[in-house]
Image 1: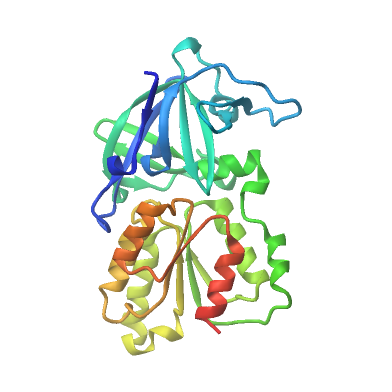
Image 2: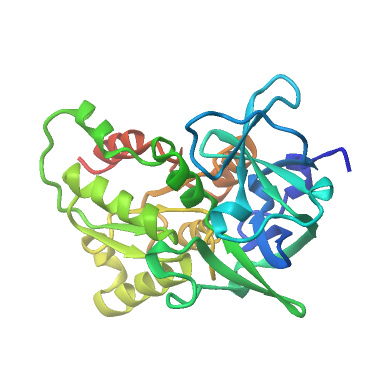
Length: 308
């Protein structure tokens, strides 16, 4: 295997079906997974140039073609031993949050199509709670696949690549806004940063859910309890990630826009996966706006427009 591109045409799935494709790989015999939408290509591991005073999990840099890419030693980050056959190792080159990285893994097993409804939230005790790096556990055929929180991994190695609340100072003085906002984000780290940023920006009335299913059930309960005509008193806007266990952001958007009581509510997809193809999917499903993480200032500015 020299290099295999994973083009956008490889991952096209019908919008709103709550399905995705997962690339399975191993480190020291442990099975992990990454959303194919994050993968640009895979290639055989090759020599890299070490960088002085870099984070200990950064293996170095290399230039496969015209771009210099940073290589992250995933085994080191997870506290697992290095490969016994390093000459057979793999680089998974990713693209998310408008950044490109290569993750050094030991083998790539293959790609499978799976429903988000089959992804379970990881046990907080086993997987480290807020300090853990697993966002879900996929049960596929006879195996369990740990889906890693690659955004958190990158943020821990390079904090500047994550949401920066300091950037909100550019918006100047803020007023308190109590309109109710639903925030849906499965990453413990990112949900904390998003909520803190919104509260700092004056949006203090937020309700957070870990996945689209929980948010959908909550909105249906609001309609049942308070009536469809009063829904905007309890929800004025939805800010949602795309990839989440049980129900993803695309499926949730489709359900909201197909629902007579909810379809007028603005839906903002705030995700690391906003690329041209994903943007087209979101538009087809009726998303009112799509913003790439970690652009928190753009998110707040959009809320200022939608919720004056």
